[in-house]
Image 1 (tube, one colour):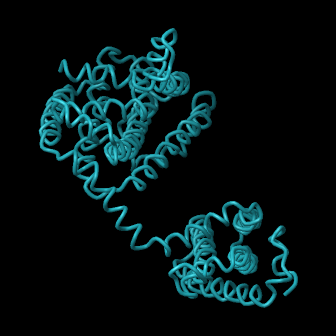
Image 2: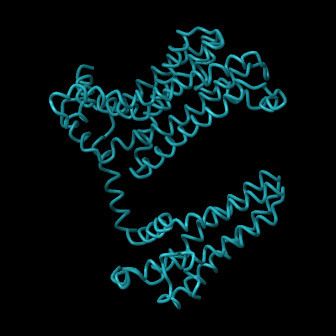
Image 3: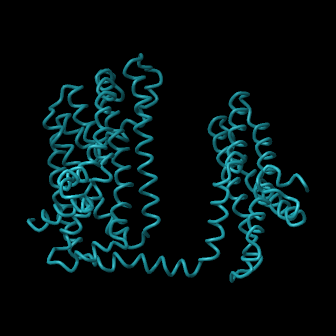
Length: 447
């Protein structure tokens, strides 16, 4: 434990190495506490948002459970799942191609101490979801008159339990998860957590300051047992506050058991292979698919960098939604969306080929065929707009209760988009010298 504390002390102060001597101490403190302070700023509003809501909803009974208990159980489950989704990829990323881990392996430090050290650093960077959980359980206890001290203890035990689960998952998932995938998943879940906080700040005041709509609440009866059942480990602290102290014993025993298992797995983990394996795998994958993947990614990034391309992608979707939900009809909006997006696919395919012509004849030096060079100009716009059209159909299917045969339009749309893309490429090749790329909306104007 002493070695771990020393490792943690110097690890947290490592980011302050560039500070001067007069500011070194202040730099260490700010570097170590800044993520926690920033996350706590999200936790304080949670008290105000949930406190009033819990107080008003504690007397509303749904399927034998008060609505405040259902709300805190549902929130705990969602935040717990988000924590797993954010912490596991981040923890895996902290070991992949990490020179610090390889250096620590040369020191007389146990592998479990290294894993625990990386877990603390990752927890600090992903502390927003933990704060959103820890602030909610005590707030529920105060609003409903439960034991405040017991709420803190049970919430901390639940966090320890989730950390142990995350550590075990990270050890197993790290064997196949590469660095780029882990970072993408972590960032997506982190954004979802922030969006969830913003959504709660907008929706919960309606329950706190407006009359509760019992008619709509009755529809939640079927899902109450889903979030308050014994299987849901995220709601165990809530059950402890309800007087079911068996779940407190379960929290202690399961947390202790998983902690022992996770530390044993950490001591047996080959951190050197764990840190270098993915780098080798990625290198082999890049060498194998370097040019093919590169061309597809290049064309996708070109579309994202062109303002008109983003507009062309969003406009058919927004137009279909506005027209469909305002007229309570789906047929005309769907066909207009298909018509407009088909025209835009031609323009964007021609735009991508024009970008290739700007670098001509450099692409001829690459070890690729003409088909491999042209195919991304067809597939990228076609795939993007096909996914967008699928989203439109799915939204209308849910909103208007349409039959599943409406999705047969997807192959039709894909065929139209492919034909439009090939037509755009053909016209671009014929008129390449007469087209001005400065305005992509006029790429086809000379055809």
